[in-house]
Structure formats: C-alpha cells, structure tokens
Length: 262
Image (cartoon, rainbow, N blue to C red):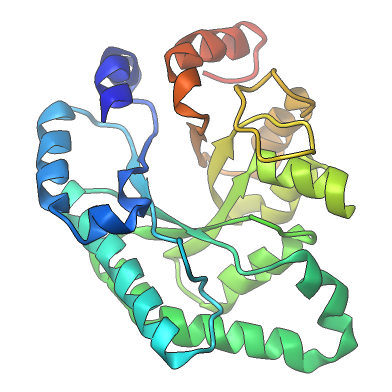
C-alpha cells in the first residue's frame, strides 16, 4: 500500500501495469481484506491501467493430491478471485507446480506427468470456472521450472482463455544457472502468444534476488527482443524487494533511454 501511494503519480502517468501483493498472506485473507480493497479503491480512483494481484501460495501448490489440502488450496484461490472481483482486477498470479525433481523424473514413467496434470485439473476446476465468470486471467508463474514448455502445456490443457502463462525473469535466471534450464529469453519464446504476464526482476543465478533490472546478470536486450518478437502485449510488472521500490521510476527511465521498455 505504501509503495503504491508513493508511486501513484508515476503509475497514473502512463496507466502502467500494476500488481498488488498484499493478498498472499494468510492473515490478510483471514482478516479484513475488504478494508484493504476499499483503501486501494480510493487510492486508484481514475486509474485506467491493467491491475491484478499475486494469488495465495503459502503452504500448498496446485498439484497437491491430499483431498484436505486440495480443499484449502481451492478455498485460497477462490478467495483470491473474490478479491480480484472486488478490486476490478483482471489477472491473478498462481505458482507453477513443476520442480527440478519432476523434470528429472518425467521420463521415468508417464504416470508422473499424467497424475500431476490430473491433480492440477482437479484442484483448479472450480477456480478456472470462477475466473471465467469474472473475466480474470490465471497466469501460471515459473518457480523451479526447468523446461519452460511444460508450463505452457499445462496452461493449454485447461482449454480456457483465462488460463495463461507468466514468467518471472529472476526465477528463470536461477533455473538457468542452477539447474541447466535454457536462458531467460527462451522462456519468453516458449510461451509465445500464451504469455500474459511478466515479473521483471534481476538476479545472479544464485538466489531469488529480486533486484532491479540491470543489477544482476540477466541479458535484458535479449529479453525485450523476445517480448517484441514472440509475445503479444503481456503485462510487465517490476517485482523487487520493498527497499528498491523508490528506485523503480529511475530504472524504467533508464530502460526507456536504452530503447528497451517504458
């Protein structure tokens, strides 16, 4: 909330894409989130940009097979979509279920991938229906993904225009350096027109740094070239730690001066 207040004029200047991350916390979901929505409603009055939220993820993932945990996952995802409806938000980020272990074991028997996809469909069936009803895209963000094509296949398997792909550039850089995943721009190319959303953050391949673009080892010209050539106007959200928020406008101005983005 505080960062949006400080960056309000900059956000309104070009109605830049905005993502609110207050609603990932269980205590917020179980508390008076309506009051937070009301404060954002007043703060963003007149804003015409694309707005979304980061959906809940703590303690579960979309591929869980435990029926009791499935009930919790569905409840949290549906809470997130209820918040989206109240905000007028049109995207919600959900985390990919794929891990390095999955990547190394998918060819160890077809049952593993089949069961993972089935569990995701079981968990998300009512969530996808709700997303379609309110016009809110579910965008699946890479976390530990090694093969960027698997997440695209998962999104496509729902056969819904409201299930698409998200890329976190820092996560992809970590996967590239730590697990042998392809370079970050390959994640963009793999997603193609299915790419609806990007978390822009820099990293060094060692950890999930959430540095400003340019502070790490990601090759940003390759990223933006791939976005221009393969994607179709995805939402671009700089996702950095709070201490860097005040530096976002200057970072974007530098990217714009370099002819990369605005």
